[in-house]
Length: 236
Image 1 (spheres, rainbow, N blue to C red):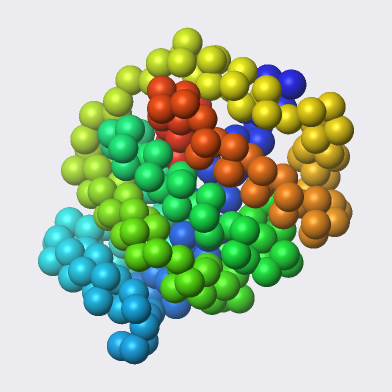
Image 2 (image 1 turned 90 degrees about the vertical axis):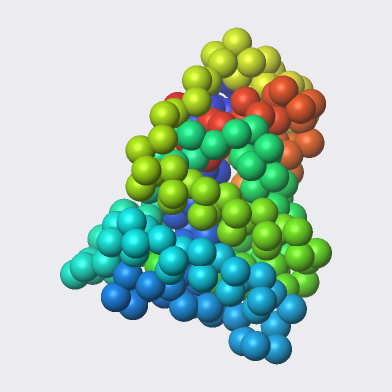
């Protein structure tokens, strides 16, 4: 059970970094090293997103980090790696807040798009991006704000080479035990089937798996929520 949960938590981390936050060029469109705001001026999130865009574009190190002749897949991989490395330098509050934001977004996605989060992919997905954007627009603005603050802080940490924060293996073990206690035997079998073959798993099962893991990870006691969020976003 523990190995299954660790594997699934890491899948969740790859999903939320590489698939939903970086899901499509409308979410992270880079032109000559600069970001552009994907939200229309009439959107409730336009001004908030512009704050993120302006802070990114005002940092020469960030612009230089991602400018160049990247292919779409190359840019996807670069951004994914940078976010995961930077996440390992962030504090508990930032990591838990973005876990809670992701837990709020996933149930609001179309089932087919939600299921994509469990499946391997190495490039952007505009359909998923549009669904994530729409979900954020239907949520309280704090969730979108927590996303971009995490995003910006993680990228800056990676570019600046900030030291990684030390993980607590004992706290991680306790967090996995608390997480495991939230699943019954039937749930575990369903998780195993999805993890064993996420490509062939029915959309309903794949979507349920990532939704259940992310929701439960966001509901743990504070110390355990930090330990699990650090595993989700920063990796082992």
